[in-house]
Image (cartoon, rainbow, N blue to C red; front, side):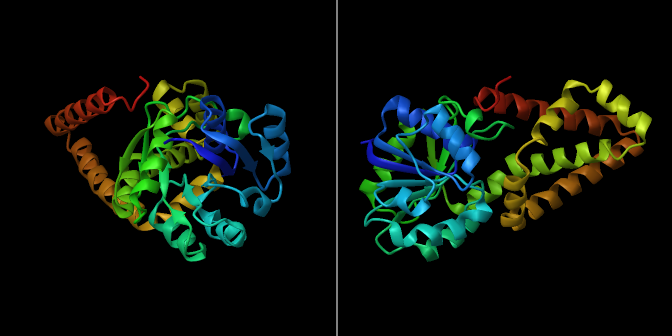
Length: 293
């Protein structure tokens, strides 16, 4: 059964507002409650008609919820959970949409009442845009949504997975630590590189900087798109997934040193081998349906 009686979404950015749209469209709840700590966001959500109830008081927002979705930056999870814990009804299912899982489990679990069912999760979906107006109901369609079972009993886990599938998502379950390593290389490191490259470009001399802007090719434009993502969210991701990110960054630095040496010593065969291998990997990623290109 994919349906919940009352769902509360905390946080109405891209993920939270997109989820609200598909819940309304697919009738995945009898009553949808939305809350956010920003009054301007609440006003936009109200104007857009995203929920049945838009509530400024987070404790009231969760008091009758059967499912609570915490679609907020990972650094805010502990404080938000501590706020709502006493207001949760028995048997409520709690999930999150954070891009790190070990840190979120450590931040949320200690604050929850013993009768709450915590099922951490993470939709592998997004754009560089944020805010309730950026959401759209097809965001999760044919995208992976990773679930950490976290010792949830079978009926609750099955209902939650059915709910996610009803949004159009492809559900995979995995261990939280493994999730963090996978995301460190597939998402977190690319964002770190993008922020760095864009920062390097704009530290150049003024004339060169202007021409970088004027003659930006598609590759650099892709980097600027990634680097325009929500800075608060990504600050929290790197702080809360530091071990996995640093491990992958070390591996990347080693590969970069290999590439640097190949260029310096004009080792054309090594460069061609690397570019051929990575082109083949990129084709596999595209064939798996994870690129819109």
